[in-house]
Image (cartoon, rainbow, N blue to C red; front, side):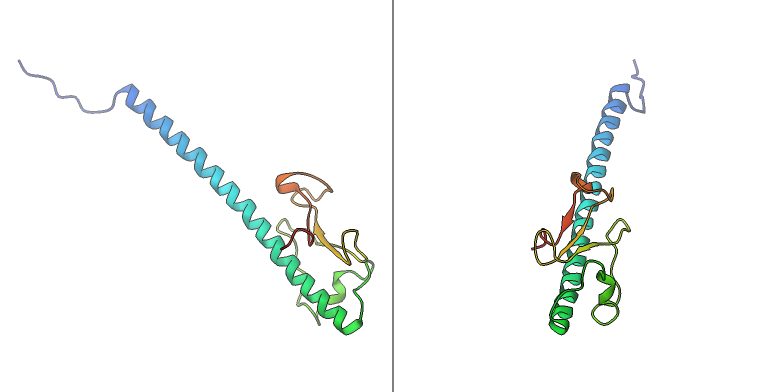
Length: 129
């Protein structure tokens, strides 16, 4: 009596493989999303440091910061080449005098609205190391 040789996969093996691929895909998407959020936060921190440095140079020359009305555009081109935009394409907001310090440099996050959580949270120079 000869045994018949079967090639292929059983239904159980296919279900297990699809299940494992689903878990891997979900984990990968989650890691990519977290990485993107981290990159946005890093860019905000770098931009705010650059703007703050330009503001400090301006203050050394003029003995005060630009007013809120003058804004960050007062720094261009002598102290900064251009004022960067936040990672979501919005302009950074500026208050002088600030509510949290001598000046406030901030963004409202991805939704461009005050308040929010996660990627929509407000970030400012008070958050920068």
